Structures are given as C-alpha cells and as structure tokens.
Length: 370
Image 1 (cartoon, rainbow, N blue to C red):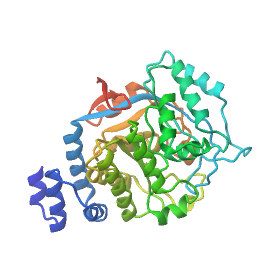
Image 2: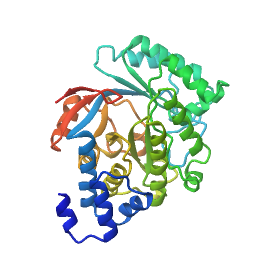
Image 3: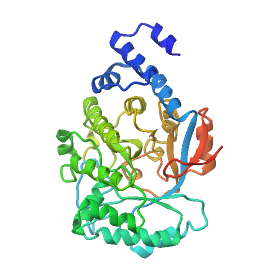
Image 4: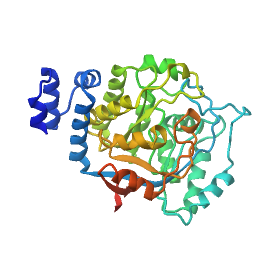
C-alpha cells in the first residue's frame, strides 16, 4: 500500500507527510493543518488505518456502561449547549441521591463495568456531595469503575469545597473516583472559546485539572467539540495542546471528537458539518495524536452508520451499551433519540466493518473478544 500511494502523483509536501506516517514519525502542526486542508479523504483513511492497525491491530473495543446525569441545572450558559437549564426552568431536572441510587440498583444483576457521571454545574452542590454519591454507588456496585465529572464540574465543586485542586482530586479518589471523562474541553483557542463558552473554566484550567489528575494516578479522556465556528487551524491548536500534555503525563486513555449538534441552542443558525467532515476529523486526529493509544467514536452523537464508517478512518473504540441513560446529545438533535445498543448489536456493527470486536474495561484491559 505504501509503494502504491507514493507512486501516485502527490504534491511533494504531501508525499513527505505520507512517508513520515509510514515511518511512524510525528507530524508537525503545519503538516496536520495541510492534511486537513488538502489531503483526499481516501488517503486520510489509508494513513489513519495504518496507524490504528499498528497501535491496536484489527480490534475495535466497546464496554458495558451506563450514564448518570444528576442534574442539568447549570451556572454557565454555553452557546452550543442544548442541555443546560436554570433552576425552575421548564425541562430542568435535579435528581435526589435516593433517586440516583435507585437507578444504580437496577444494575446489580447486570454485567456493567462502568458508570459515567456528568451533568450541569449546580450552584449548590460541592465536592463532598458528589463524593458521597460515588461512595454510595460503590456500596451498591463495588466493582464498577466510576468515571465522573468534567474538568468544568471539578473546577467548581473543588473550589466550592475550599480545597486546592490537588487536595480535591485526592479526596475524590478516596471517595472512589477512578477516572475522569474529557468533557468541557470544547475548543482551546481563546478567541473561539470567548465566543462560545466565555463563562466556563479556561483552557489553562482544563489542562491543569487533567495534569493534576494524572499526577494523582487518575487517568482521563480528552475531547474536542468540532463543527461550529472553529476552523482547521483551531482544531490543530487544540490537538497540539493535548499532545503536549500527553507527552508530559501519559495519562490520557483516549481522544473523542465530539460533533456539534444544532438543535435547541444559540448556534443553531450555523448548521452542522457533513459526514465526510466527521470522517476527515477522525482521520487527521488519529494521524496527529501519535501518543494517544485510542480514538473513540461516540456513537450516540454521530449515529450508528457514521460510527461504522469511522472504523475505516482510524477509530478503534465506539464507547458502550449506554442503555438509554444520557440526554446530552438527544436534546441537541442527535440521530439516536434513545441511545442504547445491546452487546450483540455492538458486536454486529463492528463485525460488519471487518473488524474484531472486543469488550474492554474503562482502562482498555480486554475482557473478551468476539
């Protein structure tokens, strides 16, 4: 395949990038931007698939998980968000701890390995409230991995508890926090962030929270919200800052591109990017993030068909069963209004793409291959 590609009539600078990828060398920011702007989608798929296979073989992973979204009441007002509500606003929810634990109890006899907890930044709930929630969840499901709270939630709840970031993360780990998701990153470039989410924690704060988590042996994920007012240069800047932090800590498990969905938010007028753009973004992310072991396609966000296509553009993970337990993307107009897939459905989706399906835990230890 390498010789076939290099024998075609490619621009010299693109041929240089292709050679670097096949030598498994790091590409520069300028080269990443060139791939976004100039490379054909077919070529990107070949390059991204080469890297995916070098890192993960023919395996595509999923896990058995469910989500808890304690509240959508939030102090922030991000322009892209369809989820957030004010207290007493129509559509707001604020589940009690008993209601949450009742939901968790439904999974006593189910083979779930992960609970994913994210929600709005509630003005009255501090770190100890959420820490007690984790502790009680683990009393019900003692072996479940708790992946909880975006950096934005952590920033607020730890400050509200009058603790330093290091103290707060250590305490949450004592409560039972196992890892943190990647939400709240959005786009790192300041000029874009000021237009879409100027109220929330800054880029530097997001990066510092994840760095501190890694130093405390709390692994995390990373995300990027794409397809709104950002451009390719903004995306590369975002990926560059993630790559730099991963060089420093090695604490990121996976990178998850999150597609902006237009329904019911202030940015709706701009529309959404195409499926072809989704695939381009997956591929360039896989090529550029050479120090990230995994790239995840979050199927409730982009739908099952695009998720299946993404497996030919560098993706080696498709999240999990979810069990219709998240509303974040369905409220923004995602294709799957009731996000739930059985293990058999996930395995079939992967097998139809010519890949080997593997159930994993949150830290990518393989439980079973299909």
